[in-house]
Length: 181
Image (cartoon, rainbow, N blue to C red; front, side):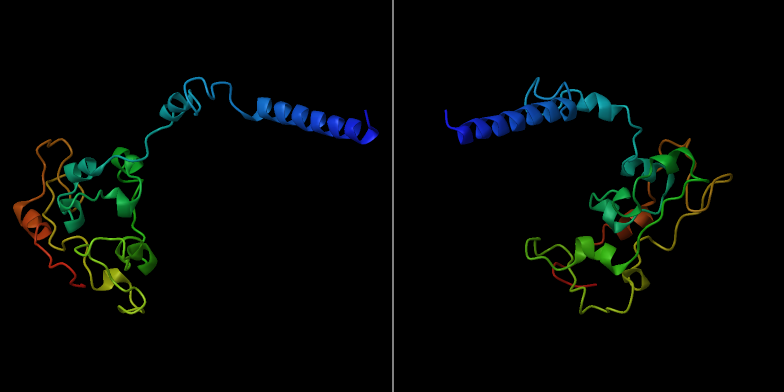
């Protein structure tokens, strides 16, 4: 055999040995046992504490819902994960990023969105202002809370707590497709 063929065989052998060695260290043992994924990944993920609660947890306490919630958008879409807040609402507050860029994540002009979805040209539509300066997301006339609760909420023990009809009627007001607010 020619000396260059021997050298190439040794190089390929080393590369294959290195690949198998690195793969055995980096690829989990359960990978590929039942398809092209790590079989124990669901069990590993389920060990983590939940971060999101869903909008029903917000509706149970907060009576002042938005037009977004009436259309199926979860409160956590804008406010972020709320599981910690539902456990300790005094110490764990949820806040909203009210920058133009954040609102533009959903409402910037995009030809791929349906025409009835409210879209705004973010560069032309009041570029010096935050969206929340003109557009009020939460109704300002929040119902009064029962005794012993924080303002704008209803007691958590009241399982029948739902938004007031006044809030629901405001949230359900139809908007004209293509009209920029």
